[in-house]
Image 1: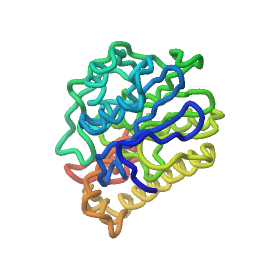
Image 2: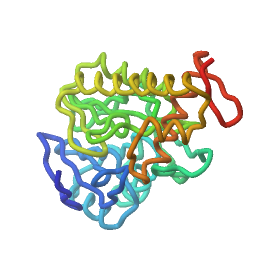
Image 3: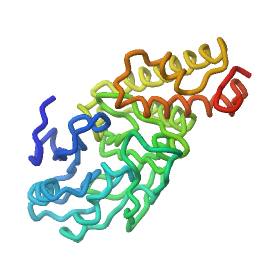
Amino acid sequence: MDAPYARLEPLEPKIARVLAHNPSAFTYTGTQTYLIGEREVAVIDPGPDLSEHLDALEAAIGGRRVAAIMCTHTHCDHSPGARPLAERTGAPIVGCDALALETVGPRADASFDGDYAPDRVLADAETIEVDGTPLTAVATPGHTSNHLCFAYGDALFTGDHVMGWSTTVIFPPDGDMAAYMASLDKLRQRQDRIYYPAHGPPVTNPAQYVRHLAGHRMQRERQILALVREKPQPIPDIVANAYPGLDSRLVTAAGGSVLAHLLDLERRGLVEREGDEWTAA
Protein backbone atom coordinates (compact mmCIF):
# COMPACT_ATOMS: atom_id res chain seq x y z
CA MET A 1 0.00 0.00 0.00
CA ASP A 2 1.44 3.34 -1.04
CA ALA A 3 1.23 6.50 1.04
CA PRO A 4 -0.08 9.40 -1.07
CA TYR A 5 -0.17 12.03 1.65
CA ALA A 6 -2.28 15.21 1.43
CA ARG A 7 -4.10 14.10 -1.72
CA LEU A 8 -7.77 13.33 -2.28
CA GLU A 9 -8.22 9.75 -3.50
CA PRO A 10 -11.66 8.64 -4.74
CA LEU A 11 -12.41 5.11 -3.53
CA GLU A 12 -15.94 4.62 -4.86
CA PRO A 13 -18.89 6.93 -5.61
CA LYS A 14 -19.41 9.32 -2.66
CA ILE A 15 -16.41 7.96 -0.73
CA ALA A 16 -12.86 9.36 -0.85
CA ARG A 17 -9.92 9.59 1.51
CA VAL A 18 -7.07 11.90 2.44
CA LEU A 19 -4.13 10.28 4.22
CA ALA A 20 -2.52 12.17 7.11
CA HIS A 21 1.26 12.20 7.34
CA ASN A 22 1.51 10.53 10.76
CA PRO A 23 2.91 7.05 10.10
CA SER A 24 3.99 4.94 13.08
CA ALA A 25 4.05 1.41 14.45
CA PHE A 26 0.42 1.96 15.51
CA THR A 27 -1.00 4.03 12.64
CA TYR A 28 0.55 2.12 9.70
CA THR A 29 0.97 4.68 6.90
CA GLY A 30 -1.11 7.23 8.86
CA THR A 31 -4.68 8.16 9.70
CA GLN A 32 -7.12 7.92 6.80
CA THR A 33 -9.63 10.75 6.84
CA TYR A 34 -12.71 9.92 4.79
CA LEU A 35 -14.94 12.34 2.90
CA ILE A 36 -18.38 10.93 2.16
CA GLY A 37 -21.05 12.50 0.01
CA GLU A 38 -20.98 14.44 -3.22
CA ARG A 39 -22.88 17.75 -3.20
CA GLU A 40 -22.31 17.99 0.53
CA VAL A 41 -19.85 15.94 2.57
CA ALA A 42 -19.13 14.60 6.02
CA VAL A 43 -15.55 14.22 7.20
CA ILE A 44 -14.81 11.08 9.23
CA ASP A 45 -11.79 11.08 11.57
CA PRO A 46 -10.15 14.42 10.72
CA GLY A 47 -6.94 13.10 12.23
CA PRO A 48 -4.08 15.00 13.86
CA ASP A 49 -3.82 18.79 13.89
CA LEU A 50 -1.29 19.03 11.05
CA SER A 51 -1.44 22.08 8.80
CA GLU A 52 -0.55 20.06 5.68
CA HIS A 53 -3.39 17.65 6.36
CA LEU A 54 -5.92 20.36 7.19
CA ASP A 55 -4.97 22.27 4.03
CA ALA A 56 -5.46 19.08 2.00
CA LEU A 57 -8.87 18.48 3.59
CA GLU A 58 -9.97 22.04 2.91
CA ALA A 59 -8.89 21.71 -0.71
CA ALA A 60 -10.67 18.35 -1.02
CA ILE A 61 -13.88 19.83 0.37
CA GLY A 62 -13.58 22.55 -2.24
CA GLY A 63 -16.28 24.87 -0.99
CA ARG A 64 -18.94 22.19 -0.57
CA ARG A 65 -21.12 22.28 2.51
CA VAL A 66 -19.75 20.10 5.32
CA ALA A 67 -22.68 18.43 7.08
CA ALA A 68 -20.55 17.19 9.97
CA ILE A 69 -17.03 16.48 11.15
CA MET A 70 -17.24 12.97 12.62
CA CYS A 71 -14.91 11.32 15.13
CA THR A 72 -14.90 7.59 15.89
CA HIS A 73 -13.02 8.14 19.17
CA THR A 74 -10.72 10.60 20.87
CA HIS A 75 -7.20 9.26 20.48
CA CYS A 76 -4.79 11.94 19.28
CA ASP A 77 -4.38 10.42 15.82
CA HIS A 78 -8.13 10.78 15.19
CA SER A 79 -9.81 13.85 16.68
CA PRO A 80 -7.44 16.86 17.19
CA GLY A 81 -8.04 18.06 13.63
CA ALA A 82 -11.77 18.41 14.33
CA ARG A 83 -11.76 21.84 15.96
CA PRO A 84 -9.45 23.62 13.47
CA LEU A 85 -11.36 22.06 10.56
CA ALA A 86 -14.64 23.21 12.12
CA GLU A 87 -13.21 26.73 12.33
CA ARG A 88 -12.29 26.61 8.64
CA THR A 89 -15.62 25.19 7.42
CA GLY A 90 -18.22 26.21 9.99
CA ALA A 91 -19.31 22.56 10.32
CA PRO A 92 -20.43 20.97 13.60
CA ILE A 93 -18.37 18.28 15.31
CA VAL A 94 -20.59 15.21 15.62
CA GLY A 95 -19.95 11.66 16.76
CA CYS A 96 -18.32 10.10 19.79
CA ASP A 97 -18.56 11.46 23.30
CA ALA A 98 -15.63 13.30 24.88
CA LEU A 99 -13.17 11.09 26.74
CA ALA A 100 -9.70 11.90 28.04
CA LEU A 101 -8.19 9.29 30.31
CA GLU A 102 -4.71 8.61 31.60
CA THR A 103 -3.73 4.96 31.65
CA VAL A 104 -1.68 3.25 34.31
CA GLY A 105 1.86 3.91 33.09
CA PRO A 106 2.82 5.15 29.62
CA ARG A 107 0.64 4.39 26.61
CA ALA A 108 2.13 2.59 23.66
CA ASP A 109 -0.36 3.91 21.14
CA ALA A 110 -1.83 7.40 20.88
CA SER A 111 -2.92 9.26 24.00
CA PHE A 112 -6.35 10.83 24.42
CA ASP A 113 -7.30 14.22 23.00
CA GLY A 114 -8.23 16.34 26.01
CA ASP A 115 -9.41 19.25 23.87
CA TYR A 116 -12.09 17.37 21.94
CA ALA A 117 -15.52 18.98 22.43
CA PRO A 118 -18.35 17.68 20.23
CA ASP A 119 -21.31 19.82 19.27
CA ARG A 120 -23.47 16.70 19.17
CA VAL A 121 -22.93 13.18 20.50
CA LEU A 122 -24.51 10.34 18.55
CA ALA A 123 -26.03 7.42 20.43
CA ASP A 124 -26.05 3.91 19.02
CA ALA A 125 -28.25 3.70 15.90
CA GLU A 126 -28.73 7.49 15.79
CA THR A 127 -28.42 9.01 12.33
CA ILE A 128 -27.68 12.19 10.46
CA GLU A 129 -28.28 12.69 6.75
CA VAL A 130 -25.36 13.31 4.41
CA ASP A 131 -26.06 14.11 0.78
CA GLY A 132 -29.43 12.37 0.94
CA THR A 133 -28.20 9.18 2.61
CA PRO A 134 -28.44 8.36 6.33
CA LEU A 135 -25.17 8.02 8.21
CA THR A 136 -25.69 5.85 11.28
CA ALA A 137 -23.65 5.54 14.45
CA VAL A 138 -22.78 1.99 15.51
CA ALA A 139 -21.53 1.89 19.10
CA THR A 140 -18.48 -0.38 19.31
CA PRO A 141 -16.81 0.00 22.73
CA GLY A 142 -13.68 -2.01 23.41
CA HIS A 143 -10.69 -0.19 21.94
CA THR A 144 -12.08 2.78 23.88
CA SER A 145 -15.37 3.06 25.74
CA ASN A 146 -16.53 5.90 23.47
CA HIS A 147 -15.71 4.23 20.14
CA LEU A 148 -18.23 4.51 17.30
CA CYS A 149 -18.27 3.09 13.79
CA PHE A 150 -20.30 4.86 11.11
CA ALA A 151 -22.49 3.10 8.53
CA TYR A 152 -23.17 4.82 5.19
CA GLY A 153 -25.17 2.66 2.85
CA ASP A 154 -23.52 -0.76 2.92
CA ALA A 155 -20.10 0.64 3.84
CA LEU A 156 -18.91 0.76 7.46
CA PHE A 157 -16.23 3.17 8.64
CA THR A 158 -14.60 1.21 11.46
CA GLY A 159 -12.09 3.62 13.00
CA ASP A 160 -9.76 1.51 15.15
CA HIS A 161 -12.30 -1.17 16.04
CA VAL A 162 -11.38 -3.15 12.92
CA MET A 163 -8.19 -2.22 11.09
CA GLY A 164 -7.04 -3.44 7.71
CA TRP A 165 -3.47 -4.22 8.64
CA SER A 166 -3.24 -5.20 12.32
CA THR A 167 -5.19 -6.28 15.37
CA THR A 168 -6.61 -3.55 17.60
CA VAL A 169 -4.84 -2.42 20.76
CA ILE A 170 -6.97 -3.00 23.86
CA PHE A 171 -5.31 -1.01 26.65
CA PRO A 172 -6.92 -0.93 30.13
CA PRO A 173 -8.35 0.73 32.09
CA ASP A 174 -10.55 2.17 29.33
CA GLY A 175 -9.83 -0.56 26.79
CA ASP A 176 -12.00 -3.56 27.67
CA MET A 177 -11.64 -7.00 26.14
CA ALA A 178 -15.15 -8.23 26.95
CA ALA A 179 -16.65 -5.08 25.42
CA TYR A 180 -14.41 -5.44 22.37
CA MET A 181 -15.48 -9.06 21.80
CA ALA A 182 -19.15 -8.10 22.19
CA SER A 183 -18.65 -5.32 19.64
CA LEU A 184 -17.06 -7.76 17.21
CA ASP A 185 -20.08 -10.01 17.61
CA LYS A 186 -22.32 -7.02 16.93
CA LEU A 187 -20.51 -6.38 13.63
CA ARG A 188 -20.67 -10.07 12.75
CA GLN A 189 -24.46 -9.83 12.76
CA ARG A 190 -24.46 -6.94 10.27
CA GLN A 191 -24.52 -7.22 6.47
CA ASP A 192 -21.90 -4.64 5.51
CA ARG A 193 -20.29 -4.97 2.09
CA ILE A 194 -16.98 -3.30 2.96
CA TYR A 195 -15.11 -1.82 5.93
CA TYR A 196 -13.09 1.37 5.65
CA PRO A 197 -10.73 1.48 8.66
CA ALA A 198 -8.80 4.49 9.88
CA HIS A 199 -5.55 2.61 9.27
CA GLY A 200 -4.72 0.14 6.54
CA PRO A 201 -6.50 -1.05 3.40
CA PRO A 202 -10.25 -1.62 3.07
CA VAL A 203 -11.65 -4.92 4.32
CA THR A 204 -13.57 -6.48 1.44
CA ASN A 205 -14.63 -9.66 3.25
CA PRO A 206 -16.09 -8.23 6.50
CA ALA A 207 -17.89 -11.29 7.87
CA GLN A 208 -14.91 -13.58 7.33
CA TYR A 209 -12.48 -11.00 8.70
CA VAL A 210 -14.48 -10.40 11.88
CA ARG A 211 -14.61 -14.16 12.49
CA HIS A 212 -10.84 -14.23 12.06
CA LEU A 213 -10.34 -11.41 14.56
CA ALA A 214 -12.59 -13.06 17.14
CA GLY A 215 -10.85 -16.39 16.64
CA HIS A 216 -7.45 -14.76 17.08
CA ARG A 217 -8.52 -13.22 20.40
CA MET A 218 -9.91 -16.53 21.64
CA GLN A 219 -6.69 -18.28 20.68
CA ARG A 220 -4.69 -15.63 22.58
CA GLU A 221 -6.94 -16.07 25.61
CA ARG A 222 -6.35 -19.84 25.60
CA GLN A 223 -2.61 -19.27 25.28
CA ILE A 224 -2.52 -16.87 28.24
CA LEU A 225 -4.64 -19.20 30.35
CA ALA A 226 -2.33 -22.13 29.56
CA LEU A 227 0.74 -20.10 30.55
CA VAL A 228 -0.62 -19.08 33.97
CA ARG A 229 -1.80 -22.63 34.59
CA GLU A 230 1.81 -23.80 34.21
CA LYS A 231 2.99 -21.43 36.95
CA PRO A 232 2.24 -17.96 38.36
CA GLN A 233 3.68 -15.31 36.02
CA PRO A 234 3.91 -11.52 35.81
CA ILE A 235 2.70 -9.83 32.63
CA PRO A 236 6.21 -9.22 31.16
CA ASP A 237 6.90 -12.98 31.32
CA ILE A 238 3.54 -13.77 29.73
CA VAL A 239 4.31 -11.31 26.92
CA ALA A 240 7.76 -12.83 26.36
CA ASN A 241 6.27 -16.32 26.11
CA ALA A 242 3.17 -15.42 24.12
CA TYR A 243 4.85 -13.03 21.65
CA PRO A 244 8.28 -14.46 20.80
CA GLY A 245 10.41 -12.13 18.67
CA LEU A 246 8.05 -9.19 19.16
CA ASP A 247 9.17 -5.78 17.88
CA SER A 248 10.35 -3.83 20.94
CA ARG A 249 8.07 -0.92 19.96
CA LEU A 250 5.06 -3.18 20.46
CA VAL A 251 5.95 -4.69 23.85
CA THR A 252 3.96 -2.14 25.86
CA ALA A 253 0.91 -2.59 23.63
CA ALA A 254 1.17 -6.38 23.95
CA GLY A 255 1.33 -6.00 27.72
CA GLY A 256 -1.84 -3.92 27.60
CA SER A 257 -3.68 -6.55 25.57
CA VAL A 258 -2.47 -9.32 27.93
CA LEU A 259 -3.73 -7.28 30.88
CA ALA A 260 -7.08 -6.80 29.12
CA HIS A 261 -7.37 -10.57 28.65
CA LEU A 262 -6.38 -11.23 32.26
CA LEU A 263 -8.91 -8.75 33.63
CA ASP A 264 -11.64 -10.41 31.56
CA LEU A 265 -10.54 -13.86 32.75
CA GLU A 266 -10.46 -12.57 36.35
CA ARG A 267 -14.05 -11.30 36.09
CA ARG A 268 -15.04 -14.75 34.87
CA GLY A 269 -13.28 -16.42 37.80
CA LEU A 270 -10.63 -18.20 35.71
CA VAL A 271 -7.50 -16.40 36.96
CA GLU A 272 -6.45 -14.47 40.05
CA ARG A 273 -3.68 -12.11 41.10
CA GLU A 274 -0.98 -12.71 43.66
CA GLY A 275 0.97 -9.45 43.82
CA ASP A 276 2.42 -8.85 40.35
CA GLU A 277 1.84 -12.43 39.29
CA TRP A 278 -1.17 -14.04 37.73
CA THR A 279 -2.20 -17.63 38.28
CA ALA A 280 -5.09 -19.92 37.39
CA ALA A 281 -7.96 -19.79 39.84
